[in-house]
Image (cartoon, rainbow, N blue to C red):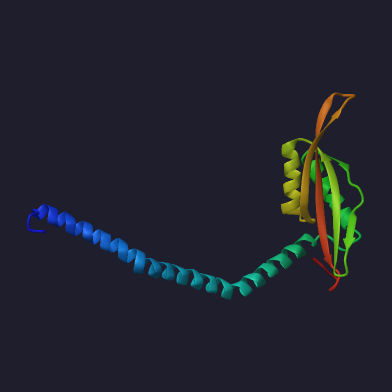
Length: 182
């Protein structure tokens, strides 16, 4: 059968046969071996992450406690938090040429272990100046957690001027179980 073929065709048949044999071996043996090796590598990675998880959780808990304490460095007690936030808002508003147009009473939600205070501030001004006030409140002043910000416009029909307003929701949490501010 092979006697009538030239050396070139014999070589091509040999290469084709080798390729077919490799594909069959890959499908039968090597594919499952490669998948098992990949699964083993993934399981080892998951096991490594699982052993590091308690340490990471403790680090995150410590960072959260540290940040919560930083939020309340300026607040002496739960009663004067409202006044401290208003004072900081007034300072920032005069610094960035904005005006505080509303600062209603705080909303308090309390369970047996946690008390959450939500303060709402409405500030009028230019967009960039409102962003500066928001940035300073969140990063520099740290009077609470900025929970939400809403921007809206209102038109004064007497003067025909459209004003931009920012409604900022600031939240403070207090752990009632240990009587610590968090």
